Image 1 (cartoon, helix red, strand yellow):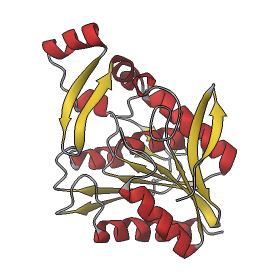
Image 2 (image 1 turned 90 degrees about the horizontal axis):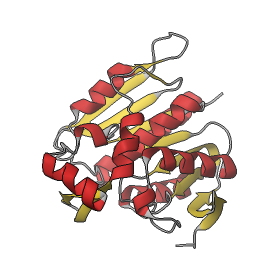
Image 3 (image 1 turned 135 degrees about the horizontal axis):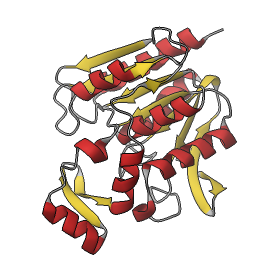
Image 4 (image 1 turned 45 degrees about the horizontal axis):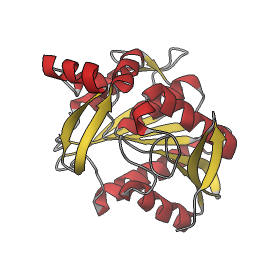
Length: 251
């Protein structure tokens, strides 16, 4: 694997890897406590190499190879990180692929900047609102320690800091409307233990085209799919969806 490149943004080095290629750039936005070296990101890199497609992968500040402190990360900050790297490396409309929390960021980017398409994988917008279920003990821990923890199926406990939670409330997308003027494909496993698959239905219902047209939105459910959707046939669904969007985006 080649070393990442870096963009200095607001005094922090943001790490990214860009594979030049044809077609609209595909931008992978990782999930919470994840980075551009995850299974889906690496699988997309293999696919992009095989298809000669342009692909941008990045790490948010405080994550992966990027500088900064994870504790300072918020949805607003990580959205700005993504926007800055995209503008520097592959300016112009792209196809955004958001995994879990990355779907929240992808949709926020598509609301503010025209894109050619959005694909969400087990999308978890607004998870700081519906996913934490804060108790009085949690609120006391936030006041005392500045964070709360939740067990994870994937390794170390997930830590959620007070800044992230406060900012998440200001960044909510639901109940909508979410005004996105591009095709959106929402992929979700119905055996996802972390993010309810019906959340993707809620997002689909909230999506609106800014000019009032009927939006091009599809939800694609995988009956036995888990949260990661990283099995071979799950990844094949993702790349087939990207192939389809490339055809739709062709002039």
